Image 1 (spheres, rainbow, N blue to C red):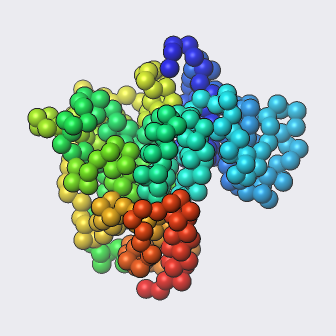
Image 2: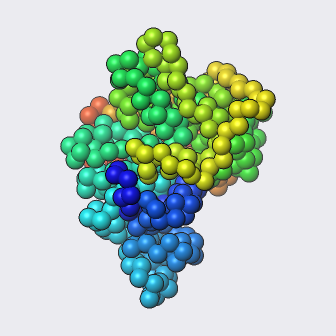
Image 3: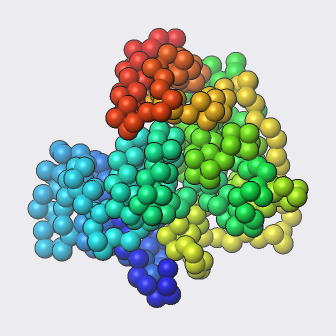
Length: 388
């Protein structure tokens, strides 16, 4: 992006943890390079109104019809245009003045906005890993056909993206995704049998929404990131590994064919990868704390406990199978997490329900987008009636 160019940014999911961090980056920028051009939320009407009045975007979109009707009139006179539903998302991301779209809607619901932005040829800052888990080959093909860039926002994929700049694609031997291990690192399956939602939501490092926090506790978050990495970076399944790194300072690593390992280090703060995705190819001073390597510190690495946390192996299996497997796993996991948070199933039942859906779903090796949505609906229904 040429120096001095102002980037109009649409943030899908602006009231979530990633969306709020993105607005913190925009606020720190002070209008020098970034402008919040469009914001969207599902049902957090009050918070979206506050954001709209603080940042004065061109558009805001509410995807929940009841919340949209309640907002009618509250933004009158502000210069902010209120939109609603899928059409509102599509209008914001495809507007000729939109430069970058940050997709931070949680779950498979984020695929539609990402797809519309890529269809319009926009640069997408991708914080919604489910987009590539569900439809990786189709999404990457669309980006190529529309000459649209996808820049990773997940800290792990941002780290890989940065490290890969040190060599060519054919020089990469493997990528190593790091995991904090979540709140239950070192626990046995017996100790996890009675875990409550409150316990699972207490992540030791990151502040995230409830669904992602539960995914981190089961290691399903890392399973989904494995699948995302394959499609985002064009890797073979054998080129991806996971290690547990509880300090969350090394965000991921790339090993090259000569044996060199390049890692990206920083304090655990999502604003850094968000800012990079919004200002790339430039690096600018931001709001994040700096890593002080002059003080004594230790960094630890260990293999993940795949027996206690079987969700991780589901991710590797889906990465190898491809086809509709990603849509089945993702939808099953979203439904299972919702049931766990509602106290309908136990913590250890989440990967069991996902295993069942993955094993029994109508597999298609080369699905269309419509087929993927049908598998998504099927898996949610199956997990909704699944019994331990």
